[in-house]
Length: 300
Ligand SMILES: Nc1ncnc2c1ncn2[C@@H]1O[C@H](COP(=O)(O)OP(=O)(O)OP(=O)(O)O)[C@@H](O)[C@H]1O
Ligand SMILES: O=P(O)(O)OC[C@H]1O[C@H](OP(=O)(O)OP(=O)(O)O)[C@H](O)[C@@H]1O
Ligand SMILES: [Mg+2]
Image 1 (cartoon, helix red, strand yellow):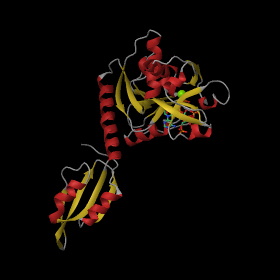
Image 2 (cartoon, protein in one colour; image 1 turned 90 degrees about the horizontal axis):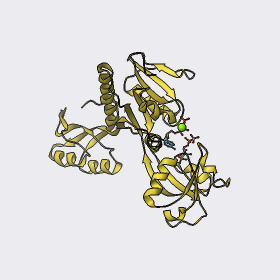
Image 3 (cartoon, helix red, strand yellow; image 1 turned 60 degrees about the horizontal axis):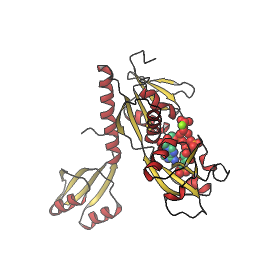
Image 4 (cartoon, protein in one colour; image 1 turned 180 degrees about the horizontal axis):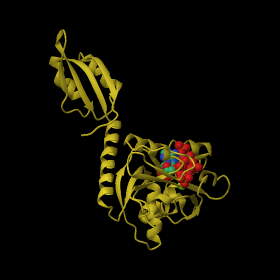
């Protein structure tokens, strides 16, 4: 069954690590949605969009099968599902539209913290607990290390101390969960971020236009998050030096200052964070009133 009405259907994680960031991204893109914790389909009030709120594991399949038009999903879950389907002889098609700037984590092999470790060869014939058997299999095949996996869908970190497995392969971000369970990370096998995917089958003209609009807005939101608006007063003779110091700046706006002929006001959009060290250097060059402001939206 496919989408019968004319709304663009987007699958998002209902509850978990990605949900807050997904909802925030839609909000920043001007998609107004009234969320109701119990409702599994939410409708936008101002755009023809509906949100299907599901377990993240189901999102790749919903996109591959064309049940939804778009989905936001961790690359780890996306590739795991893709590898699984390919292994089962299925053809997998979808479009990856954009990598997003949240959901960053890595899939790693970890062992008991007191166990010595030399190389990936230490996993020869080991029993490894994981929720990502296909990504693990691909990695171990590349490394030429035979192993056995045991599938655990959650609380994977408990496996070694519970005597279920010798090691684990699970997601790591801060490392706090590994540490709390007496484990140490020994190999990173996959780096992941959230991404936006679209079903392979073409959308009708209106829906594709809406997708393109959303993509432009997402780009604007991401660019803005990475950029800063910098305002400062600069001595006229130091303009070039100061511009060279500011990261990613091309054409600053220069404005005259009232009652001071020796300085001008300089406004620039910088593509990177301005570090304290650079601020101090600016000051040494005679710059004053340096302000660094966040940017909410950007349209190039
Ligand atoms: N510690 C983390 N830091 C950042 N991103 C993470 C972290 N853990 C997981 N992620 C990313 O967020 C995704 C969702 O993680 P989460 O733990 O919410 O999944 P889940 O428990 O499988 O949720 P669901 O109930 O929807 O199946 C992961 O697949 C990964 O891409
Ligand atoms: O390195 P850390 O910052 O400690 O993060 C890693 C943990 O985060 C994820 O689980 P989550 O907390 O999302 O819980 P879940 O496995 O129950 O979904 C992941 O499965 C790890 O257990
Ligand atoms: Mg899940």
